Image (cartoon, rainbow, N blue to C red; front, side, top):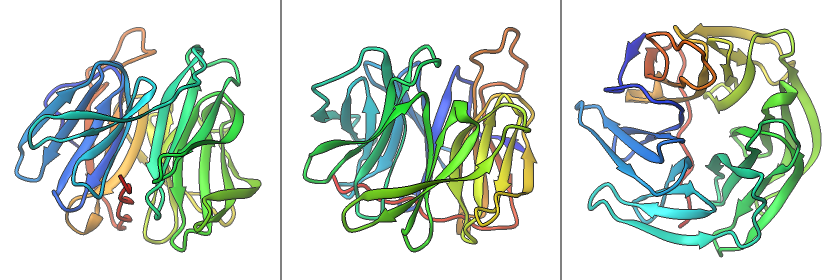
Length: 283
């Protein structure tokens, strides 16, 4: 397993592989930074004024980021940062957390309780016509998101439940229904955090506090494989590189009394399966 980040961070999260740029992007939530690393080894970063919780490529060519209570378009070409939407009604007990775009370009973004204890948070969508709507409430730490290959199922994690859920998904309307538990990870160390899906439809889930990524078959909820990581707090995972056959894993130093020397880096590992392309946001 190879370290690709030039230094470690308190809370690296939200890795995405930008297919057109052949580059990996990720965030350091607490520092409010977005990081870029390409296959030629070139590294750069941009700092925003508040927490940055999630990012995604856009049709306009930049990166969309959730920061503070707003959505921004960020350009690594000229360093510009432009606010495109600000949430007006905001619960101060929460902050934005994990988010991704669906195949229609909508931005799905969750919030989390800042104390990580109370179900004050939810899951929301920013539509491409700039309408912001709530999808779920009674959530504590909204986390991993993934869609199956025909966009008929949304997979979702609320971390403290230690479960992976599925919903029937209507790609045309962006509505979800019929919530099911597809995997209960209560017997695993740590809690489920970020998530991605491979070309076979298997779910790859980072275990924060568990020191690994587990591979789950959503048909029966079984763990069919795992990737050990040399530090406990594994935050998220994505596929990238040539043919999407490399796994990129983000980790964190937070909540470790004495962080080990491996904590808080971004790791890369060649795997025997391929991933799926990240959806492009319609902004």
